[in-house]
Image (cartoon, rainbow, N blue to C red):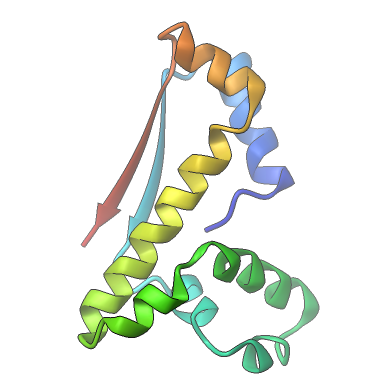
Length: 115
């Protein structure tokens, strides 16, 4: 759900040592973590500290003003999940080694949504 240190380290290992050729960031419909991240901040802060930190990380990448304009709950959920996928892909593009592999056409990064 979010690109933390452990996740990025695992992906770096896969790309640099296992020679993985494709990284897929896959969001799925009705993702509980993304749904929880849309909750008001005061509710998130009532969660255990590690969970609250993870939800805040996801929340920081969501476009909440846009989400509030979407009236259909399912469409709002999909938009939130897709936005999170985009943010995680953007996070991968900040990694120098990963982007070197992309520029050399040794690696492809794909964002996707699963119903």
